[in-house]
Length: 633
Ligand SMILES: [Cu+2]
Image (cartoon, rainbow, N blue to C red; front, side, top):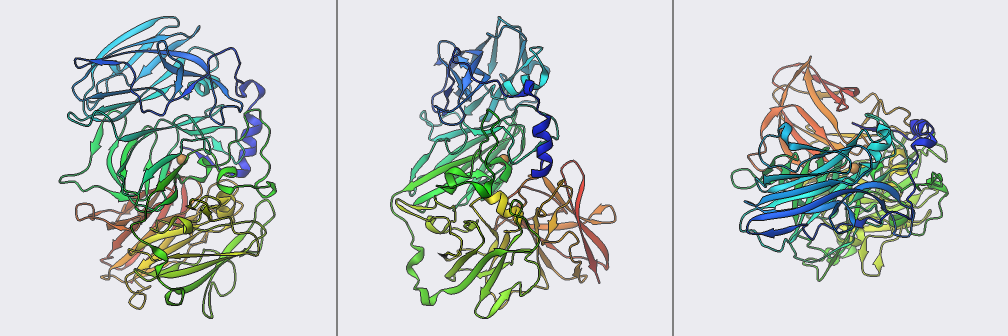
């Protein structure tokens, strides 16, 4: 697990001594190839794949090719350049794999995991040890179709810390295609990596730490740009080969989660088990998932990790500190102010629907004002939103936390004018809402062709127009300097309901989790903007809907529980990311849910007897971060 905090991070940076600083790339060693995982390695003949792998030291350029790189260890196919990720092993079901691995390193033993049959429980035989300068061969049946990976680690080759960093990219995808699947794969294999100069379990990630989160060997804005046509079927196999948890979020569209794997086995959904349909899929360390989606609307879209600390700007490898966010002269917010786990996707063609058709006069008119709240500093601002409709303002006065819940009606066109009263540019992303790219709120990126929505300058405004097509729980937040601005307080819930007049706030409760402003140690979480959240008051025998909204900027593994004393009560899951669950998933279960950033979960609760309950929010390691008292009469 990992926690992050801007303040404590300074300590970590200072704790990295010169001996642990990244090894600069030397011109003498070979340059790593960036592997887009489209070409399988080895030669496949008569049901046998023969592949010769080598582990080498090489110069990796995760940013631009002409920017500084790192000396790391990477896998290569014999006779070819080393690559990040390593060579793709991709075979049809039923293939036998004959692999050799050569350890070209001068010192240390290479331990390779994952060159083994899949779909069977792992055994000690799944690991092979290769002494420096030697080669070992393995033969194994590919096993059950799915998405897997292999990885390497050197032991006894220098200090453990620097060794862990140098081995961070020693991995490659391993895909077993179902028998009879198309010979030319129409999917993309995306391997997530994390390079850090030191790896300390539970260590902090800070706003200016030198590290690299990468997708197929590159960090945003240098990740591959994907292009699709409206109506394509897009399939990704996502492999989390990093030591961090990533809630992966797609803008603008739901996607189906076709399978989830743990690296050794992969479970496909479909048939009697319905396929989850989400906008965010939380991927734990070493996990894989397959997703399918259909781009229905043209424009620029993002697929990215929703842990804000995994999409921070890439700090230079030479240790030069990044200019503070509020002091950067930004040319393009999307390109200059994000890094790491982001992919840009351009959808071309013709829209199958047009959102702007409704005349402005027929649209409901809202104004969302981003403004400065009390108590902030320039470096750690206090911000908030006020929502205006006709003569009404929420909040009417007082502190601007939490962000006001925007109540919308399904199928009713709305215009939301975002007014920027901050001292810096901003933008608003309507997370989970299916809308036109131009209104999606990624500053300097969202849009079609040359019609791109700029960041909203101080004193300026931008009107987003959309018609929410479905009822559910969604969220809104800035997509310009989002870490700084969300930590300042800019975050809110969107509730789309079938009918505003029939909405019953007594039985429908939002619980939004966000990060406290100027939070020092990550020890507490805000629930609905408060460190001491209001008591939830319920009546026995009545049905309630609880909507969990996770807009925390880090902590991708928080767990919410609803307890009577120390026992979990039960609730019924009803929706995820605003999408109602199909009957086989809408089940009564123990009231416990792990949440990733950018996820929403709806549960139905019917307390059967009076008494006290409590809703707790904990870290994955068990630290209590927040408690909401619940009283049932
Ligand atoms: Cu992440």
